[in-house]
Amino acid sequence: MEARKLSELVQAIDGRMVGVTDDFVVSGLAALDRARPTDISFLTHPKYRHLVINTQAGAVLVSEKIVNDLPVRPMIVVSDAYLALARLMQMLYPPVLPPCGIHPTAIIADEAVLGTDVRIGAHVTIDAGVSIGDETALFPGVAVGRETRIGRNCIIYPNVSLYHRITIGDRVIIHAGSVVGSDGFGFAPDGSRYEKIPQIGSVTIGDDVEIGANCTIDRGSLGMTVIASGVKLDNLIHLAHNVCVGENTVIAAQTGVSGSSTIGCRNRIGGQVGVTGHVMVGDDVVLTAKAGIMKSIRSREMISGFPQMPHQQWRRTQAALRHADEMREDIRRLDTALEDMRKRLTALEEE
Image 1 (cartoon, one colour):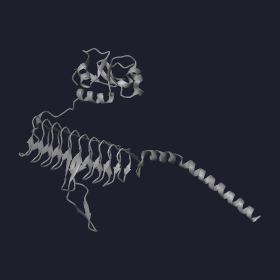
Image 2 (cartoon, rainbow, N blue to C red; image 1 turned 90 degrees about the horizontal axis):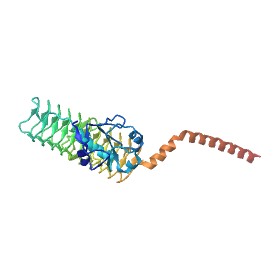
Image 3 (cartoon, one colour; image 1 turned 60 degrees about the vertical axis):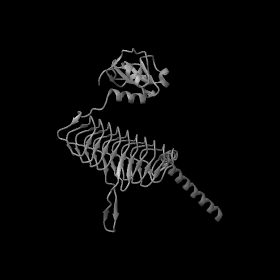
Image 4 (cartoon, rainbow, N blue to C red; image 1 turned 180 degrees about the horizontal axis):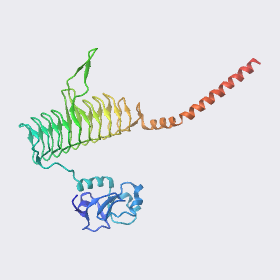
């Protein structure tokens, strides 16, 4: 990274400096126990506050709510240290991109339209009717199908495959190996075999979406598979045909969503969640890791387990399961005691 004046960075994140001179120059960003005097460090969780005492960092990024609980030292005080850290890292460590221009090994159809200052890496293939916005970067090995449209300031990492007639918004990031627009899993049985159903729909991806490595997003069978603006997908996620994901939803790795299901806005979905087809998940829903979603969910619910249940019910169930062996032994003892009582009653009746 290039050295930057701390005062400029602090102004950009709406912070204030405490005990730091205006001419302090930042050379890096590092953890509290590894920082050098020219580095900025950060405290985003109170349990690490003991490391602040001995850190060598030139300044520590902290949240306003805990600054009074820390020893006196040079600080950058902000309302939310974690969010400010993310913005600082974006400024200090911009993505490494291919050189501006078109690599000589790229194959670009004459009918393709490229914006200004695009970056096209080695062995990229761009088919006819493709449109690519200004300052978008395509890393080596990217394949862009016919009539696909890619917006401005996008980053498409190596070996991404974008099928035909896909629409991608501005500032979208797609990581290596992902496939967008592949056929949905559609087959009609005739009693002895399966007949393929052509998948003639498409995929629409909004602005500011990030798609992790090795994700697969199927095209709609007739209509659209839709990923709304602000969605963040982790690695190894599968979205089937005609799935719709609402704005600013985040989905962790190895989650799969079956065809024609709708995921609402601002949802938080844990790893290895499975969502069956044709269900509706409302807004502001939390699905914890490994949940199996078999039916629709109202907004503002927290769901866990398989089969799905409210999170608090799932916690009670798990607590009960931890004592299952003890409960079984108790039941055996009760059965034995009950049988003894029956025998005694029988003996008394016979007397």
